[in-house]
Structures are given as C-alpha cells and as structure tokens.
Length: 158
Length: 209
Image (cartoon, rainbow over all chains, first blue to last red):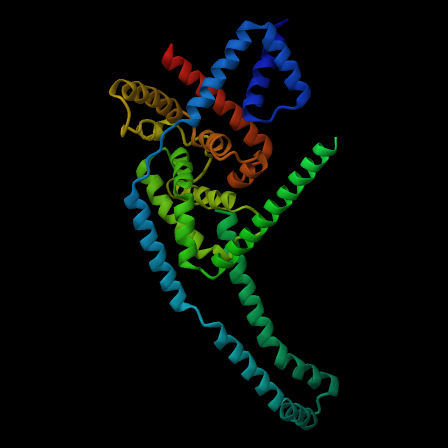
C-alpha cells in the first residue's frame, strides 16, 4: 500500500457515497478498506457526514404555505379572467373563413380589374392577390412564435 | 427457475404499469398546468411544499429569502405551466424554476453570478434552526447541538455545493437531472458534489474534535 492507493481510496469513498462509483472500483475499494484502518476510519467519517446531512431539520411555517395558496389562487383567477374563451376563438376563425369564401371572388375580380387598368402583368397581380391573404396570417404567426420563444427563454435562461 | 422467471415477468409488468401510470400522471399534470387549474396548483403545493422549501433553504441559506422564493416559484409555475413538458419529471422542472429565480435574485445585486462564490460570508448563521418541538430535554439538547454543528458546517459551504448536496442526498436525483436543474455540465456537478461532501466532512470533524 502506498500514498497513491490511499488518495485513490479517498476519491472512491466520495464516489461511492455520491452513488457514482463503478463496480470494479467498488470491489477495489472494499478490498482496500478491509486492509487499511485509516481509510476505513475515513469511510466511517464520510458515512456520518452523509447521515447528518440527511437529518438536517427544516421547518416550514404553515402561514407561508397558506399565503402562497391564496396568492396563487388570486393570480390564477386574474389570469383566467384575461383569457379569451376557446369558443370565441373558434367562432372568430369560422367567421373569418366565411368572410374569405364570400369575398374571394369579388377580390379576385377587383385585382384583375386593377391589373388591366394599370397594365400590370397577370402573374404580378395574382401574386399580390395571394399576398393579400397570406401576409396578415404570417405576421400573426411570427408575433405568436416570438411571444412563445420569449416565454421559453425566461425559463431556460434566467 | 420457473418461479424466478415468473417473478421477473411480474416485476417487468409492474415496472411497465408504473411507467404508464407515471406517463399518464405527467400528461394529466401538463394538461392541468396548461389550463392553470387552481385545484391542481393547490395539490402540487401541498405535495411538494417541504421538498421545495428544503431545496430553497439549502440553496439560499436564509429563511426569509427561501420563503419569498417559495411563493415566487409557485407563481412562476402557474404562469409558465404551459412550458412544462409531460415527457420529463415534474420535480426537476420545479427545482429549475426555483434555481432560476434565485439566480435572478443574485443577479440583481451582482454583475457576475457564480454559485460557488455565493459563500459563507452571506450565508453563515442563517441556516435553518434546529427543530425543538419534541423529545426528552436531554436528548433534545444533544440533537440541537448536533443540528447546530451541521447547520454551521453547511452554512460555510458555497451555495452551489449545498444545492447539489440537497438534490443528491435528499431528492435522490440522478446526476444528469441535477446538471439540468443547475444548468451546469456533468463534470462540474460531480466536482461540486465531491468537494461539497469532503468540505462538509472536514467541517463536521473539525467541530466535533
């Protein structure tokens, strides 16, 4: 036995108590502890430390828990009242689709008329027609994505 | 031989059932958190109150700070509940919220945050007092003395060390989950765990000898 083996044993004692030791090292450590009284005493001391750590008393004042519950409930009510009911969201979507279906042909004719009036090539006014429908939805999607990314950042990157 | 294979088969079935129950519970939890169900929040506070508070006491070392962060953590759980991923466990997510709030708090007072530098000078003497509610007076006195020694030794450790100690020895979290909670690489977590344990041992030995 040399100084190196004692140093190795001390490191392995830490690993074994932290639950990170590998099986071959565990076997080596157990053999070493059987033969070395100093390292064995060190292991006992480490066991006492872990035991003391596990027994640290923590007292939680019930009034803190009660106050937390009240605050959380009040905040939940506040957030709930701000939330738009889902039925309204679906209703708005349905109305907007109906409006699109109703006005699509008229708008197409309007764009065609403008195209012929100002001599704009057909592919160009047709592209403008497509953008007319797509741009508001794209802007809304980008704004929503940005908001949810911000929310995720505030949790993952304090 | 047959008995042991039947036993193993049962064990696998039980483990699978527990896994399914866990999955189902997580999905239920995620749904409730997304809906900001106050009843669910109430049950979560009831279930995790001591564990969260113990974590915060170890992390902050101050009762008042831990109490403030306790409340803030649950508020954050309510507000950011839609970000909880049902595929991961709730506890590490809860602790990571508390951890981030603590970092925010420290950052308000400092430009650079390193939990290994939030040390004894701030925390010493603020660690939890011993529970003096029950027991024979002589035993209680002895227990108080022992608790005071442990509290002092813990108070001398940097916050980052205490944090990994509580997550490992009280919460029994695997090192990978601890790394996710504290936002540090696995080798850093291991190093803090070993150094924290050794420093605590030295502190306790020094106090008792």
